Length: 210
Image (tube, rainbow, N blue to C red; front, top):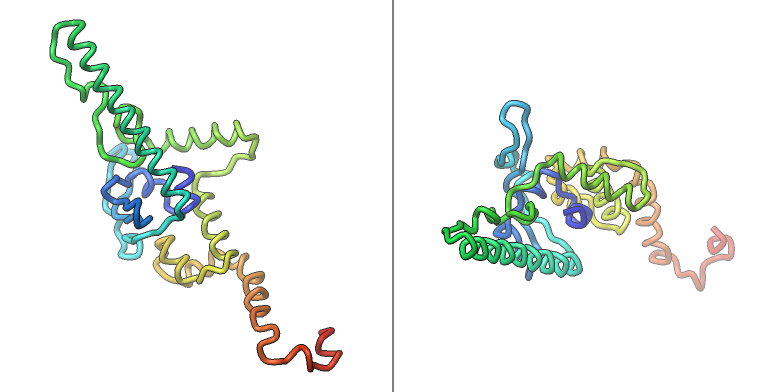
């Protein structure tokens, strides 16, 4: 989940609401259509994303697709183990044990080892534990979204593409949020024109120095 957050910029709730039906591992794309939310009155629940910009398709790189395939295989092994446990108990106690007692698959990309959905707060706690293990300073899971956007912009990805990946309503929102990245990008863009208009071999020595 954390790797996919870094590779796509999805929000925590969007990540935890992804089902395998939302992901195409061959085309390396996923669709965002709902979110796992938490509310004081209603608890944790799934809800459709509200805005048109939030309903989007996002691509991810081949190495992330390969890791998701391994993750899917691990999930299948967990389900198989649970079914074996149910069968073992059925034979031992001479009763019919429903495999769903040990594994109730919800078809989610990221779920508990028994197939149930994750709790957003638990995922945040796991993230903090990983930071401690890696001896890194504490920061929120949401910061991975900002890391994704910053890296994309630093790699020269067009602002419009980053906006659509993040699900921002307008390109201005993206520009305002990541204005601190823009000065370096503008200088890099200007350097792309170096030598385009002036032949460096015939340019005056002063121009070459400039």
